[in-house]
Image 1: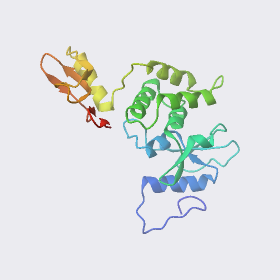
Image 2: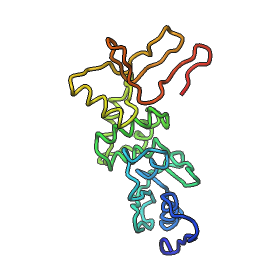
Image 3: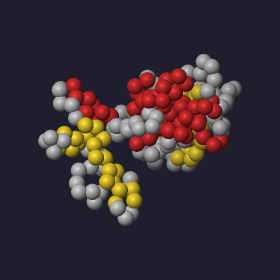
Image 4: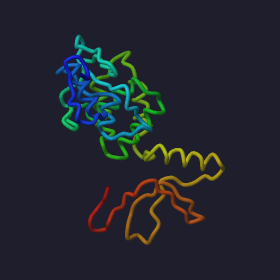
Length: 221
């Protein structure tokens, strides 16, 4: 027995996804995977969101006490903000980042938004629209997320990973300033940006494969 009324087949190896399913069933049919656990389902890693406790949303008055899980009682979760991930009802990325704005620090919130935008899991517009729908005086995280979105307006280019951010910060702190988001070197056959470059030394730094545009095929992810 995993939870009262929820059982698992002993021959099936236990996994994090199985734990999410078991907790969801125990919380009840109106539960939705949300907050940090929703972001994990959308493939954000340990460096950005923890795997435990498991996090869910239920309407006010729903059953919320399940071992190893946190059930947030929230009534403003719209159907348009929910989708299926591995058959689990889950907050979509734009909604999940609005949810965690109330539970994570300002810097971590910025890193999560950067990751979602860089990997195109969602858009600046989708996050802003969701925030506008649920904003109300005193709602936790609203101000912080609004500031993060304002900072990431027109012309902002996000770093692509925690490791990359740490590397670039370390280089600059050591007195080795570099040019971020530099044009891809070459003779113009390919267009795009690299994460950083030392122009004089002809050195580029790229944490992921650069986003390139072939002259005939258009952009590639």
